[in-house]
Length: 95
Image (cartoon, rainbow, N blue to C red; front, side):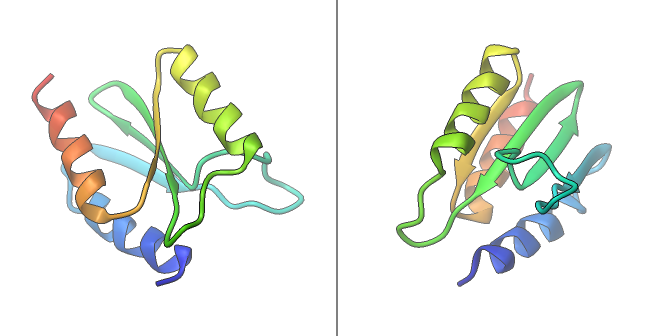
């Protein structure tokens, strides 16, 4: 599976969650380097998902960005499956 396929599958899931807003961050010359792939606002929380497949790992810049989001009291994590995302969103439903 390619990362773009994982992002698509996660996006399809996120579209089914009521009252959840998200967008796909697009890289390139007009984007900000290191920003996670999917940015979510749910129940007043900032959540960011960096999507990885296989043995791929976040870059140093991506790891630094994840740490900055967490330091700012947001939630950010690298994910590899839709199930991981579903369990995280479910945890926020219970807050």
